[in-house]
Length: 255
Image (cartoon, rainbow, N blue to C red; front, side, top):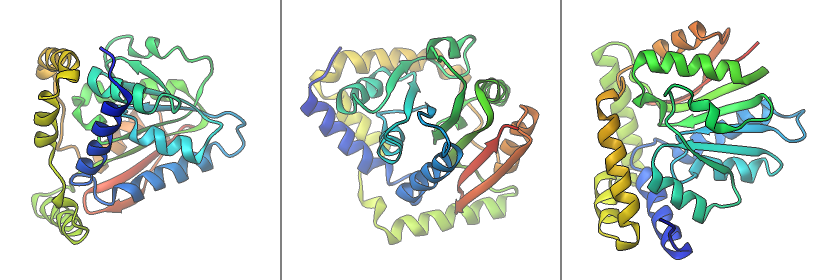
């Protein structure tokens, strides 16, 4: 199911443009996450980082650029996006095909020491709340003391009126930056489906999505609820470090 370098480059570059429609100030959010990870791992010669729901390696690539001595393990269940990452960003991370939150999912990571940081962007919201709590607990167990989970995602505010306002602020920001001029998620995937080089990977992706469709998550969990779950999971120190509209970066530090 391998793809050519040219094909991988083409689709990853289109992915990067497409994602700007959805992540408010996407590059700034990536930069904030890298700021946190750099600070957390400042005294580590070879920090070990875990990228959860890595897709085609967008966050992993930026972390590798900021922290060239880091070892990055990047995880996703999407075979097509993983293959694009392995081809276009082969030297960035060690890519692992596993389903976050499934029983024994961390066994596939083959870690040889505790994590310095676990990171994610717009990925963990798809987990149902009980699975999310188990995942947070598992990550707390994998992190070293002083290590951190850094999660950048869209979290609605509590209350309908405030949730509408934060979403509106984000949309206005996207319009001012012309992010909505890029193709959308559905158009990107429709185009991918027409590429014969990706046909087998796309078919496998559709099969996996059908299997996991019944266990889709809670897109309406607030930042406050995520923070409660993180504390339940054993993270004593939890705080937002960045926000624009409903886009946040939450940090949970293990004592």
